[in-house]
Amino acid sequence: MVRYVPRFADGQKVKLAWPLAVFRLNHIFWPLDPSTGKWGRYLDKVLAVAMSLVFMQHNDAELRYLRFEASNRNLDAFLTGMPTYLILVEAQFRSLHILLHFEKLQKFLEIFYANIYIDPRKEPEMFRKVDGKMIINRLVSSMYLAVISLYLIAPVFSIINQSKDFLYSMIFPFDSDPLYLFVPLLLTNVWVGIVIDTMMFGETNLLCELIVHLNGSYLLLKRDLQLAIEKILVSRDRPHMAKQLKVLIIKTLRKNVALNQFGQQLEAQYTVRGFIMFAFAAGLLCALSFKAYTNPMANYIYAIWFGAKTVELLSLGQIGSDLAFTTDSLSTMYYLTHWEQILQYSTNPSENLRLLKLINLAIEMNSKPFYVTGLKYFRVSLQAGLKILQASFSYFTFLTSMQRRQMSN
Image 1 (cartoon, rainbow, N blue to C red):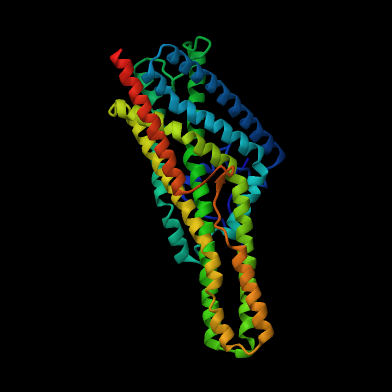
Image 2 (image 1 turned 120 degrees about the vertical axis):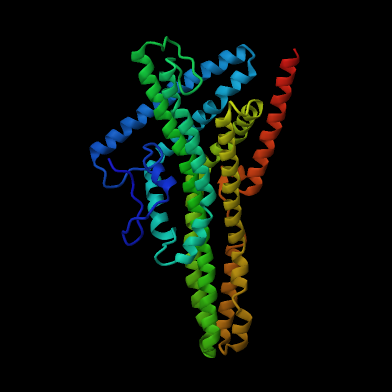
């Protein structure tokens, strides 16, 4: 059972950054390699079903804890379990969607790494520029790893202190103290933690990489067009200048359309999961900020988690805005093809007319910027990230006022 191995168009393996190399080991969110046999695929489906059942079990146990603390009106204890419950429910929705589209994801990634991903062997300068935009996301991945590491060392302290505490706030509908029940349940805690944590930083890293490399491909398209136009102007073959520019624009438009089509595939692949991610973000940030605020020394895990989620949202939003800015400038790119100079020097009136019509078509085709959206409800942009932070701050203010009211009573 081999997970999909990204390759360039020539068959050479793509060297993945460490967050994606770790994410590739996630058996829920990373597709299988096409070479995987029948029994390997069967085993993968069994693991996916088992993981889904464990998710449901954790959902029930964590929800029981939340209901118990809510009935006792213990706001602090209630919000202790809220972040892990929210991210669990988010993971359930995202995993269900991805399992239903596993084959499509594998084919989509094949297209990306073969046609869109910028090859460092051919374009080292552009690759460095694109890869530099991923540094913040890799820092966020390190923060997420710190969070799960702090959760996973809890069993060690549990054994040292001879207590039977789970990694998350949970109440089971049965007695979980017997060792033959406690150990398997604790191991499922670890399994869930690893799967969800790699999902949190891995899928965001993958989405960011898809967007920055698509953006880089558009930038290469602009660069190549400008360099080719300069050659036409320098050679100044007056009878054929208009036709040369027309052929160049047609060639560029074909590449442009291919990039636009990939953008639509990206939108189709991530619009649902992007919506889920952003929909849960405000509530999650609110709960995390409240726990970090009320007792920062004891709740340092929540502070790290809050910082990681905040930077993740802003980074993803900025990358989405960069892509929108680049695609919005494409119409200007076709307008600034020095067609006035070409027409001035050209001695072929019929080709001049065809050239003008083609430029008008190219501008019209690229009149709108491209955004990755969440079910068309919002755009993945810096503005959307800031709005989520603003909403979470409003919820946080409400919770702190509730806490003060409880304490005064």
